[in-house]
Image (cartoon, rainbow, N blue to C red; front, side):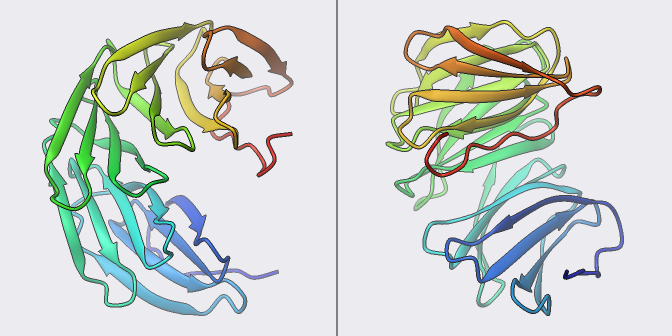
Length: 231
């Protein structure tokens, strides 16, 4: 058992890099810390956000990391040097969730300003602002082919978007609480949603139908994740 200590406030998210050699953690203290996954040894601290860092994700190359913050910005980091490669600004509220497309070309961000934004990774420019939610958006997730983006939020609704042109393709309705976590299976046919209504729902992305409702938690579900083979 390894225990990593160093943040001065609540830890908000953790993730492994692609080969499992490093762990990144984000915190309400406004920093990101990198750790050796085998030894638990502290590697470095990424500093630059001006508020709580709410979400983070390694890029597929394992050398870059994306983060979203209460300071309304998204940052792309070089993990080796700690340098900020891009800062994406445009949200009018806190950024609760970010997702890097599997092809590495786009970043999606979900915000308390009720919008989802799509950004070009290379240029740092805003590609699309996706409007459709009526309250804060808490989670975003791409399909493996990077063609679709799913978002969920405080309005109890999930929206499937065409990530290339920003079109609202369909709404997935069925939760009675906030949708705070999403996970797409490996072949991009199903999305799992975790909600404050204490349930997990499995949805067919193409049809928008709810295939299964999983009950058992006695408080809100804060995180969901498919395993690699989607079973």
